[in-house]
Length: 315
Image 1: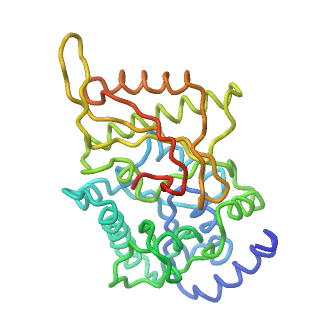
Image 2: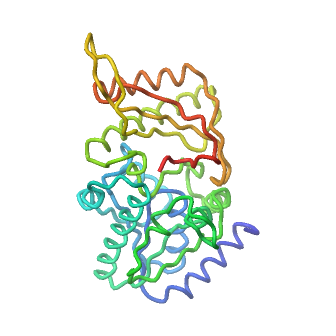
């Protein structure tokens, strides 16, 4: 990206040429899709509908947080509730790639229905370079299928437009700053949501556990940042693992699941380094998670693997 203003002007010109009619904008609440939605709003105004989908796979308080973020960004948007649709699509699915494909299909079918209602023929996404690179773009191996790239169904009826396709995350954040989007350093959250932070089978109960664990990790890391104990990481979250691990409840032996905590530093999400954090922070996180999920989570681990060889998310 040469400079943010030049990119903004050129992106608006291209959007006006590429979208002569009406469009649906997939607005996840992340920085990528928010910047894309703002560019579309400036380019074609009320011919576009920015839709935020409550999939039932979101973080604690995410609907309220995203709504406040969109309003502060001056973005017009609508919220669609679709928890049952997404959980049903993931029933009995354990393979991470299949999860992403199912989620991508569920999003597209929902957007196609909304497009039919509003007479739209275009779907606008906040896809950025790491999304299509990791999904196997330009003859590369597929690292993981991003739901908004490789997860799209072959019989998609909407035209796809991706105004940020050639940008990396640090460039998107520069553009967000230029557009006066608040909190340009907002932590990324995967499009498939907690479905890829619930390793193995996805159920309403396991998603609820992952949501609690994620909230605790975020709260404690943010407290550590406020106390200047650690610099702000790129991402910090918890993953619920589908393993039975022995624990103790009173004088009784119990079997619960394990949670892995992930805190990483990065610049553009193409590589990442596991952050060295104070042991007392990890101890507090572990104590809070096992208390909050007493009897269902009996062990908390810290993931020290860099990217590569690992990816940032587990699935």
